[in-house]
Image (tube, rainbow, N blue to C red; front, side, top):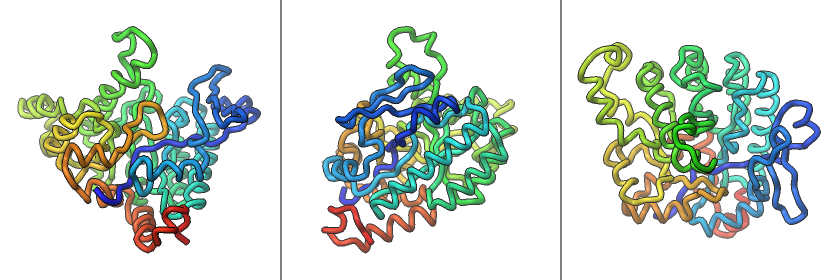
Length: 348
């Protein structure tokens, strides 16, 4: 597939324990071997390693993963939509600044999506301006904001600001509902509940009129949109029957769903082909969920095996999602780099 950008990867800054204790943040406890524990409220949330913050180690994985560049976004639990707004804003500043630091250490190999305090409109819009000033391409948000649906009226000014600033929005499952209906071990949240959670959030954005109200807003649904592609015919049927859906949606859901971007983290070629048939290849980008265990290894090769050689999916669609500033800077850096500069991660 040639050059490829992995749009779905995560980072975790080395958050100090003393700041975390005073502000209810996650902290990162690093061992000598580079393995670390993310600790939240005194309990280990996840075991990670230095790939989450170490640029040289991350660069070493790019060739093995078969990608030219990565888009860095926060580990979802860092989004902290449930914190007091002031604490969430301060944490967002730390995370956004660290993502910008990683980008600056290897120009042309990384772009970034930051985070904002979505639970407070004024702080969120201020955060969007910071994200823009740092040169990031957008933000990552959860599938709900501490229980508030993504289509809620209270969030509309934030989407309006993101559109005006030419920033994309990555929607990632976070604290999914329905776990009580599943039972079983906690890891079922990521493998079973996440796709359902994404479909619920996307339905909220569609049926609330958000995607129609902001026609230039770029929204990406992680994990191939979860269950959304599979329920679009059912949503279309509801739309055809009239009622409340007709009042907020100018067209049927399957048409409006082609406004979203979707990554390829689906693990199965047939599922990726179904997604492409449902929403069109113009909206699909390569993604992996690197560096976590659930990731899709060699994401570009997976997409090529499922769909054939698709340069737009590998490259152009990602640049379009990132917008003029972030996408243009990444494209220019890679285009002008020599092979040796690419290998070293320095395009200056």
